[in-house]
Each structure stands twice: as C-alpha cells, then as structure tokens.
Image (tube, one colour):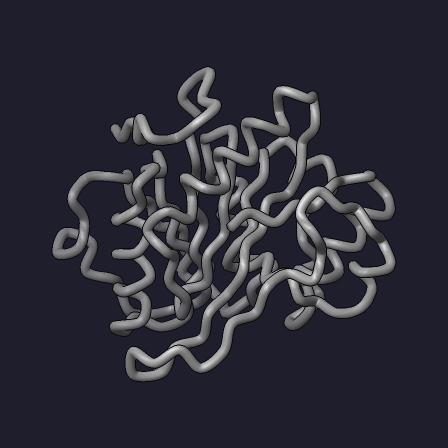
Length: 213
C-alpha cells in the first residue's frame, strides 16, 4: 500500500485517498489519466475505475505499479457521470475521495497541495471541498487556463450561482462523509450534475468550497 509523501505539510496522520475515475471508452486518454494518478507526489491509496457500460477492459497490469491499488467497478449500461461517481463512492474505502474524469490529467502535486489545505482546515474543525484551476493544452501548447472565480477561503454564495466553473468532476477532493452528508449526485442529470451537487452542498449543508493552487 502507498504512504503519503513526507513533503505534505500539516500532516498529523496518514490520510488515505480513494480516487474515482469513470470511463466509457478504453483509449490512450484513459491511460494518460491513470498515469497522472500513479505519478502523484502524495499517493492515493486506491484508484477506482468505474466502467460506464464500456465493453472493453483496460490493460491494468501494463500500467499498474501497485501504487495505488486499482479496482474496477462495472455498470452494465451507460448510466452517465453521476451514476458512475456514485458507484465509485460506494465502492471506496478511504476517508477522503477525489474525482477525475478519464479525459483529464492531474499535475503531479495536485493531491499534495489539496491535502495540505484539507488538513489545515480540519484543524479548525472545518470540512471543505477543495478545488483547483484547470489548464487546457493542445499538442503541448497551453491554450487557456481557468481559475476558480471563488477566492481562497471565501464562501461567497453569489459567486457560486454564476456558473458551474468549479470542475468538481476532475478537481474536487473532500471527505467521504461530507459527500454522503450532502447526498449522491443526481443520476437523472447527464450534464451539470456536479453543479447541482455544488449548490446543494453550499446552500443546504453550509459546505465551504476552497481553492488550492
């Protein structure tokens, strides 16, 4: 099993992370996403691949180095991102969960930066959702960079109503208990399911959403 990097600050104890990645196709993009999880400076404990009605099976032995543990959860029919993430959460065993879509990749320090924020907030008895910015690249060229419009430490609700800008599907990290307290994502929605969950979290459960670098 993996052990977090000693570079993680504010670490009172080992925080185990379950990474949840839905996929509908087996292609190089999926493998790139998996490799980016494998390469984290703060390793996750497990990676849960949720096959959303996909008939093909990923070649796990060819990409796995045993860190983190890889599980595959299979949905018989294509059920959408909300159902896939919900299934992944149900299968997870760690106290913290993080989401990534199969066509995205994480910077190698993504989890380390977020865990530092998470542990700092936990000392103050807060239980936030940690998000981060997104870069779009094309042929190794940076096309655009999108930062959360929510300032770090802010719970400005008016900002949250402006747009589904948070990219919860590929950047969000939170405690599993918090996700379950807010409730599962709405499986009737095929788009904006993470935006709807975000609004429930903030307006009905007083969850604070914080931006990490």
